[in-house]
Every structure is written in structure tokens, then in C-alpha cells.
Image (tube, rainbow, N blue to C red; front, side):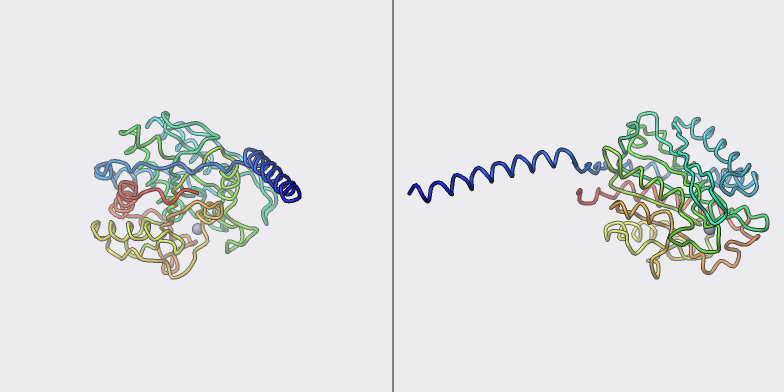
Length: 321
Ligand SMILES: [Zn+2]
């Protein structure tokens, strides 16, 4: 018996030690919790105004081209800061410097939280983002649809949410810089500068969002609107259901393949994302001088704004980690 008891005691002690060590190790590298989300009131979407969103796009486009570190970009940042402050949102400039094909370049993301939201390094349950930079091209390029349209929608979403502080407190707005590549196409080393940096910071926070939404090139009603193949099934189902009730001129459909945009670095942190983007492959003015204000339609902005807000009124937090 002794001979059998002794090994058992050793095994028990070793097991207890392992448990203790395991707990210590867990405390050292505790995985932040994804914050659960309470759906926002369904009637909030009704007060989204496409005319308001359009006016923001017009104001941003009037600043001229806004590639990273340009005068137009700085004017855009100041416009966003002033406008968001008027709606009760506090903004933070997140600055970064990155190597680009044109040399080291300064970028600035703008992060906005409602005054009632938790401060960094805590997260909010939902992130809504879009890029504000316009592509640096050898001709005047204002990116009214590409970079402008989503900016206008995000600002109007900020106004609408501010009427319900409890809803606004759950949401962080992120205006990304440097989505556009300096060369024709986004590659692993060119483009998504701001969102990559933001995603890295996000991964170091004490808590994590559970839902991400990224909008881009959403102002032209003459083309289908895509959602991302990586979206959780519940996101895809909600979006298609809501889109049906909003009667878009063109369908809101699953993208034919993965699209590289600012949602990708967010998804790579494990954040479930909804990405909405117009079918730019059909837009002959994409990355051309013709991406001007006439390509943006107030009613389309209104539909996308309402789609986003209604989505947040029906969706549940995905399974937490
Ligand atoms: Zn672009």
C-alpha cells in the first residue's frame, strides 16, 4: 500500500502545483473580454438624414485632395473634430509614422467616443469605421465617393446616436488615415496604414469590442453594395433582411470574393466585422478625376446610414471568446 500511496501523493502534489502555476500564468496573460452589446433603439435609424450626410461629404470634398499629411487632410481632421464635438463626442488624434513607397510618412487616425463612453484603454462594444484619406494621385483627386461618402455617413451617425447617450456610449467611431496605397494597389506593405496601427493598439487594450463595422465607397446608388464573405452568418442575414425593407436601387449582396480594406486588420484581431462597399470594379471613375460630388447621392447615404443603425438595433453580440 505504501508503495502505491507514495506515487499517488506525488502525483497529487504535482497536479496541485500544475493547477497553481496554471492560474498564475492565466493571470499574467489574461485574455480581455469582448464587451457584450445591447441593441440600440430601433427608431434611432428613422432620424438619420441623407441630406445631412451629403452636406458633410460636400464640405469635406471642398477641402480638396486629402492624402495623408496634406493641407486638405488637416482641414478634414479639424472639420471632423469640430463637428463631432458639437454632437457631444470627444476625439483623439492617433498619430503614427510608417514607411511607404514614397518614404516615411505621418498618418493620423481620428478616434471618437461619446462623452459618456469608457476611456481608452477600455473599448466600447462596437466599432464603426471608414477612411478619410483620398488616394495620392498625379492629378487632383477628391474621392467624393471613395473616402468622402463613408465620412459623411459616420458624422450623421454620430449626430443620431448623440440623442441616446446610452446607445452612443456603446460605440467608438474611427476615421482611418492611410487606407489608400501609394502605388496602384494595396499590398502587404502598402495601404491600410492607419487601420493596421489601430488594430495593433486595439489588441493591447484591457477590453475588446465584439462587433466591427467598416463602410467604404457607399454613396453611389447605381452599383450593388457588397458585404464581406467573412461576416458571421447572423450579420449577413440581418443585412440582407434590412436591405430588403430599405429598397435599395441595386441589390445588397455577398461580395464575390474577399476585399482588402480597413476591416481586414480588425478581423485579424479576431473581431467579427461587417464590411459594406460599393462595387468599385464597375465604377469607371474609381481612383480617377471623376470621383466627384455628383457621384454621391443623398438618398443612398440615407439608406446606408439607416442600414447601419438598424443593424445595430437587431444584432446580438457574437459568441464571446
Ligand atoms: Zn480608394
